[in-house]
Image (cartoon, rainbow over all chains, first blue to last red; front, top):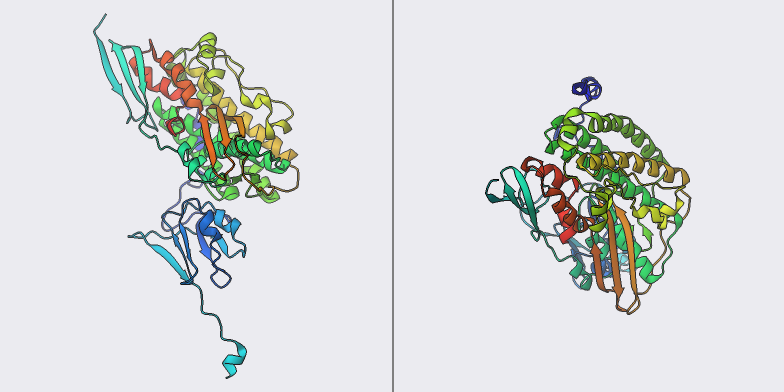
Length: 123
Length: 362
């Protein structure tokens, strides 16, 4: 009976968990290596600018004089090229997606001010 | 005999996932001629090799098409590796084959869902796409992406697959295989599927050869043509390879070839996982392609043979990157299959070549 070709699968579906989830109450499992967004560790960043040169979409800008590292999340394609090229390993791919925004903007990260020398601090 | 009328079909049409326009010249309900027109989504991606270096272009190459994303990045990387004389590690070659065959599974199941939707079998469509989700989950777990993977690089691959993930691969594929066989059985034996496909859009063996058709489209006309038979790169590790062919040449044969290729692709993945050798996954790449150096490459993508050509100019940018995609080869066959068919069968015939207009126009 050709009518019941999918009958077994359809009938079994009555007793299985739904394939869909109740978003936003439930969330999907996030695998460890998911390409979500680029995070930067500004303490170890030396502002060399290699990530800026290698980025295929020119999403990253590095201003060494101002001590700033910035990224345009709308241009970034999460290829991870910068994380592999960074000589200090301070760029990482985090598994969470960047939140939506009403306006296009750059996420700017400042290099933290250098800690004072111990001798200067004592004085 | 009625008066000839021209009916426009597409570029926006429920059966077409991508924009293709056909001028259908019909007399009564018979299509006499189909005149295709493309050019709706040309993006000039080949030109971008002039502004992106050969490492960056891989991310452009994989954006040529959403479904063949892995195939294009792999085909491009292999071409540049030939251009620069780079030999990549065996593990990287095998991992590429695993992901490429997985993308074939995902592409064919997606197509089967679309085909079921085109002939009005909604529940079959949903079952196909439900299975496809599991394949996408495998991609997500191993590459970090569901459609665009960015996992191939010139010189190897960016990510390794751990032993636990390989075990998960095998478990998920076993689960898919069991359910897929039931879906496959429906496609191949159900009366409503056969009513819409048997004897529709016939292409003979000689016509298929004369029009240089490729992929499952040509294999469904009985032509034994598959790039994987050349056993290039990672495919050399397979014990043997016999393409799935069917001599009937109609829409049913095309459905059958794709349906059986899914099982074949799963077998190839399982064989590769068994044979996967430990070791490095990439080699460092230094320097630029030499001035005037040329390389070409062929790859069997889900839709058929894709040809790549690259020429270096001594700088980090390539002088030329050219691709000949399977759908551009198959359009001539499609118009031949359409000539003489019923107007109601046009959507089924167009769909059975699995047109990918994004690839064709780039």
